[in-house]
Length: 346
Image (cartoon, rainbow, N blue to C red; front, side, top):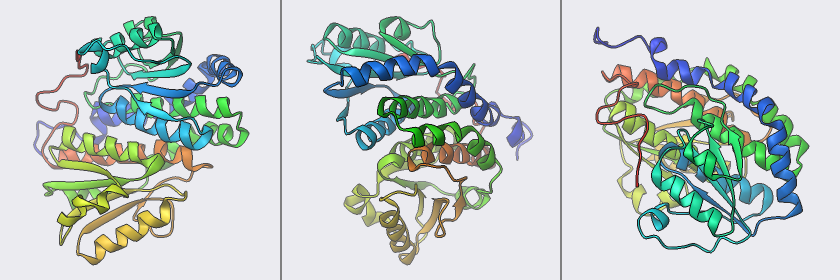
């Protein structure tokens, strides 16, 4: 490792991802009353649909929200394009909708403008933000703080994990699901347990890689998107995320001998299909790693009481591996070239 690079445990990315367990634990206590009030409102007046708005890692959290709200509550959830308001200035029809905006900084002009437009269009606007006095928070009816604390590494880690836990918190209370609430309460301990699990085979296998597929499905698709972004961002590794269903179309044609593929699984009805696809890729000679807590996995993840919570824990293990991989590839994960912490799109 070049002398100018820190040791893996000395990066801000490592330190901040490691803090996620304490952040989630603090968040669940801090937000209990606010989430209960919001859930009561949603049960009393169920929205016709949910619309999400986000960019970057927060948009991957929005992908997770789609599968959480649809699988747990049967509520159709769509991604609203911020440019519809900020560039095209087209009013949307959002009467009786729940509009969820997700942002670490709460400062991006397009996200703020669309939240204001959604509010004017009749939606109930909820902001999941880390900066509680941000413009996005001011635009919302309800603010659910992420409680991640300051995040200095350009690569978002604990704020992303806290976005996922906040989404599950809302869903568990809205559904009034005691089992899901109990599983979420156990997530901080699962995060602590998973942090020290060994993903070194992935790190060693990707040191010289140029391309990678990250595959997820359903609840795990957002985590796959997030993992692919982090590998591009911190490791200069061209990684693309796919649903296990979509990769079977055109993308799988380039998976052959030596091609690396990372599968992020959770123990639900998607699992068997994911594992079968992993075996198919192995039979072609691809380099395959499967993350999960089942018998056919290579990268261990601490178990959670509900599959909904699994992606929260899996991504923490991935962050530690990505931090180590970036350094092995001669890059500082805290300072990706050409990037900055807050991107203010219009």
